[in-house]
Length: 449
Image (tube, helix red, strand yellow):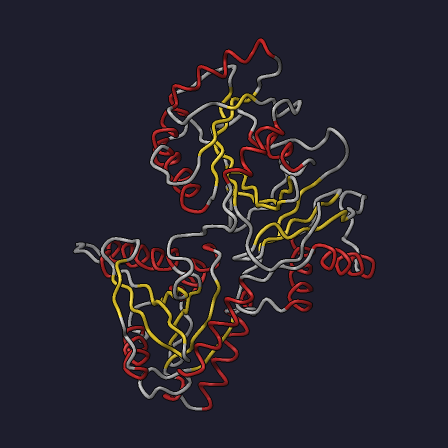
C-alpha cells in the first residue's frame, strides 16, 4: 500500500452486517492482505476497527464493524447503534449478506434503517462462489436497497467489480460528521459548580461576539457561536436534555447523558476543574468520557487566582498522581471571574485539534518504529519474543495506529510505543489508539466475522 503523505482525512467505507456473513473476510479481500484478525486490543472504538485501503490509486478508510447478534437482547438497539453510526460517519455503506442463507429478519431490520440513509448503500451477496449460486443473490432485491452485488470474499470472485462500485460512490472528499466544515465544535464540560456557565458568559461577554444561536443535533439544544482570537467557535450546549427527575441517581444519570451528548457533538472538549477543590471521582468520569469518545482534550483549571501558593503546590501533586494517564492533555490555568488566562484558551484549542488531525506518513512512521524496536525490542512471552513487522496509521480524529506483530505485545510495551510516538510527533491534546494485529503465520490468523 502506498502512502501519499497527505494530512487530510480519507473517505470512509463502512462494512456492516450480522455475524458470520464474511465481513472480515471481505475487509481482507479489499485490503489485499490479512488484516482483520481476531487479536484485537480493546480501545476507543471497541466494536469498530479501521484500516487503510487502496484501489486504482485511491486511498480510503475501511471500517470493519462488529456483527449484530440476533440472539442478544436489545437486537433493535444493537442494529440501530451500528447502522446509525455508519450512516453518520461513513461515505459509503456496504451491507454484507450471506447469499446461501438469504435475507434474515436481522438483515431486513438493518435494511429498513439503511434505507433512510443519505449515503450510498451497496448490498453484497457474499458466498456466491460460482455462476450456479448467482440466483441466490437475486433474491436479495427484497431488501429494497438496489441490485445485490454477487461476491465471493473468500475466493475473490466479483471483488474487483465491487471495489469499482465503491470508488464510483465515494465522494472526492470525506463528508465527515454533521456540522463539519463550519466553526470548530467545543464541548465545555465538568461537574456541577466548577464555573462552566461563568466561563461561557465570560467568553461571550469579553468578545461581545455571540453572533448566532443554531439548532444542534441533540434534543433541542442551542449552540453558542463565539468569536475567540479572531476565529468563530461553536460551543455545544445540551440544555434540551434537562428534564425533571425524582431521584439523585436519576439526576446524575441525566447529567452524565448531557455530558456525553455534548462530547459526542464536539471535536474538542474543555474539561473544567476547580483549582480550589481536590480532583474528584466525578471529574475523572468526565475525563474518561472524553477519552472514550476519542475527542481532543483541554484541561482548564478554573479559579486559579483564588488559591494560594500552598494550594498550587498541592494541586501539582494531585495532577501528577490523579491525572498521570492524561499527561498528554493540553492544560491551561484560568479564572472565569476575572478573565485571567481565558485569552490563552483558543491557542490550546487549536493545538489540540491540530494534534487530533495529524497523519504521519507510513514510511516515516515505520522507519522510526524500526529504529525504536532495534534499541528496545518487545519482551518475550512464553519463551518467544514477538517481532513487529509493520505499523500503519489507520485513521485520524483521533490518530489510530495498527501494529502488525508476530505475537502479543504486553500492555507495558504498547504504552512505551505510545510514549515514544508522542515524543516524536507531539500529539499534545489528543488520545492515541494503538491496536495490535497478530499475524503468526499463514492460516493462523482468524477473522472477526
